[in-house]
Amino acid sequence: MKLMSDRPARSLRPAFATICHALCWFALPAAAADTSAWDGDSRSAVRLLAARPDGSLLRGGIEINMAPGWKTYWRYPGDAGVPPHFDFSESENLGRVDVLWPAPVRFADAEGNTIGYKGDVVLPLRVEPKDGSRAVVLRLKLDYAVCEKLCVPAQAKVELPLPGDASAASEAAVARAEKRVPRPVALGARQPLAIASVRHEKGSAQVSVDVAAPAGTEPSLFVEGPAPDWALPLPEPAAGAPQGQRRFVFALEGLPPGARAEGAVLKFTAAAADQVIETTFRLE
Image (cartoon, rainbow, N blue to C red; front, side, top):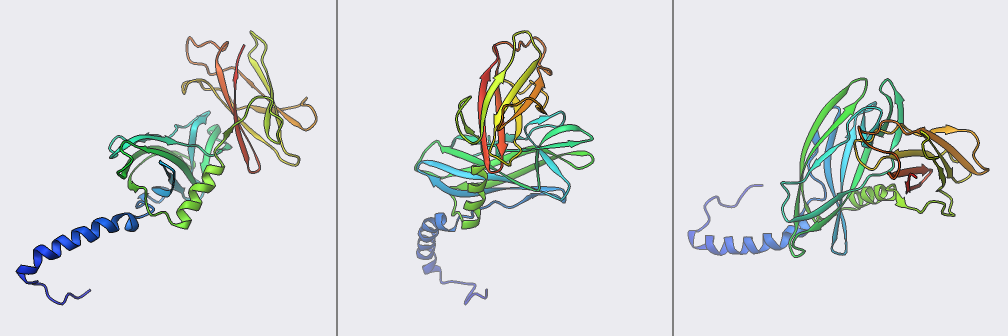
């Protein structure tokens, strides 16, 4: 853009600066971007998304986009791999941030059975400001891994003010991901997708889980221990389930040294079609 003059009259500068400061300050919320810049390479890239606030709670998302054939890991990676690590310590006015996890996919390959995502995934964020009258500047340092035939460590640094001026596309992307986040459901609940029963005999290494699922669907089931250092195997389909249910079994293996199975609380995540739930169970 060509300026009318590159030497404005000296007497107008203070007034011009005052007006510009006021106008720019009021324009910030409306002009704020709804996404950060991408940070990545030819294998994967990361950015932050802004979504509409939910009352005093701010919403957003971490989008990880991967090249065809590449994958990244869930919070529990399965037989191999490392989960993402999130560092928000450089953020401004951040009281608390929760990273939510949409339902993952199971992969069987040379690494064994791993759990994660391919293509594009958005991890929803729930953000609480320290001071609700001021914006949050969310700064994320993300350490993660992406794998094709070999696994490669990756890092991204992204920044975004919240609340941002969320576009329809940004809001829709976060909302879609939120719908894939498991909702808590009690053991034995009577609904289309539920953990119908969990059986474990004291002293036995085997756990049996029956999952009620909508007709015509093949549910997937994941299990996590009470701490990240529990490396439980993935539940495998088995015969013998009641009509309308699917049975899965797994062994209580991969416990950390000194850990006892009795009394431990396991978390089950089940997914079928567009439904995702999670249920906890205490081993006797």
